[in-house]
Length: 152
Image 1: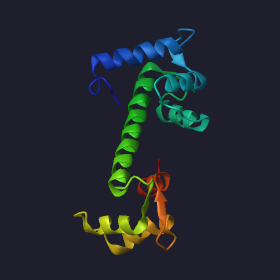
Image 2: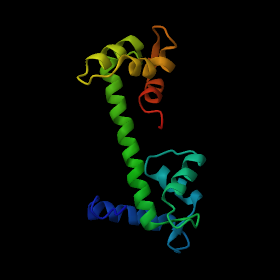
Image 3: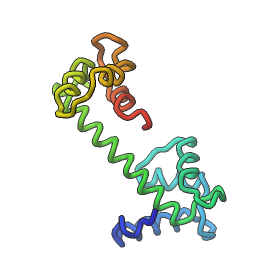
């Protein structure tokens, strides 16, 4: 993925500065450990497994370290995931109008039935199966995320 057409010069410069700061020996590569420090400095808090997964996803040459091009592509992906989380939180808050921190499975069923897309009843049941366990149940934001987007 070429990032030049997706980012402004200013964004690229910010990523370059962050990359150079954590590339302590100046060899043009950062390790998984250095990557964790970068992510935390940019407001992210990935686990060691998530860091390794990020490296594996972008380590196109398979050398176990991240060069600048790989780093920028990884940061674009990470920012997209953060945006997805924010969008999901906004959707959850729409359901959670009284701001109690939970919603009921029957509320989700109602919205899925009436949101304009013709979602078959068996698909709605599949979506709600794990969250509701077959009964009216309170669903937290974390459960909502797993239900709507299980790969997060």
